[in-house]
Length: 233
Image 1 (tube, rainbow, N blue to C red):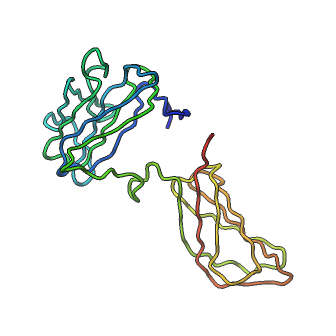
Image 2 (tube, rainbow, N blue to C red):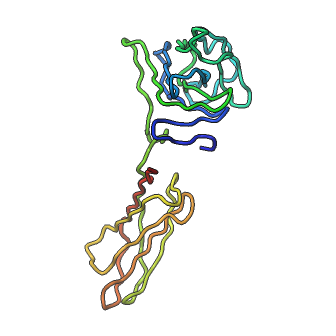
């Protein structure tokens, strides 16, 4: 996320940073992209990345992308097609229509701050009403935008004396320090309390404390961990 900063109204995108919709394009091939920058300013460039049915990037195939009002140019570094001109009213290319080739099964369609930082406040993607694709957002294999992460595993707690503790570290992909974390153990015992925190990226530590007055030894039980991304004001 370097070069992308949230604001109260949108996103600040540095040069060569962008945001895009991910769409299934096996049948839907025509789209229109509309964007709005702060104070109605001109700026930003159309950016399209194409994939085949297996999710592999299609590289530098001229038949994959056509756009209205601009020539799409292949950029090796990002493996994407980018508009050759800034999107602006004076050039009549502020709103772009995109047509994808028959072999493109998935596409990322969005905008980048190619010529410098842009203050993006709105981005919309339109398709033909008779063939509108689903927007893939927060799917299990495409977790962009997901604010809640969850994991379930098994934990066989060791025998714990009164007041003793035990720790277990579990891997939760996407976890970051500062995320809100909680855990639960599927047991009827009231001898334990659980604490949970993200101590490093992708790693969550769960601590069990025996709050009873006697030694307790539980059988293995399902352990559930759930994280919520903190929301920055």
